[in-house]
Image (cartoon, rainbow, N blue to C red; front, top):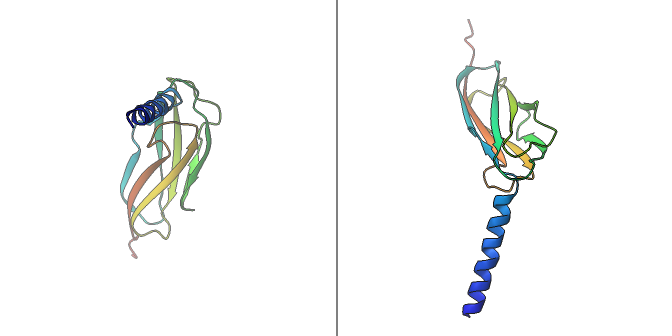
Length: 130
């Protein structure tokens, strides 16, 4: 029994080492709050990240979970260890009154947790009918 526990501990530590040795996508800030905006306005924000791993980071896809959100200018080339990148996201608030939380999924070869998405929030208020 003791041998099995030791073997499982060694396997688990081996997976932890592998995860740490690959690319590590670390967000400068993974959540952005646009605050209160008027319906119909279009806003954008640039999310910045760094590859803090030991291998090149490759982003294969960046996908919003809503058609009102568009990711622009995300890096298509591998990001070397220690280098940084940016993903700019545009949000069209037309027809989106109320509180909004949007998640953008990032598909990559990053080995760390929390690297697979970023989020923004906005409170959209109706235009004055004057």
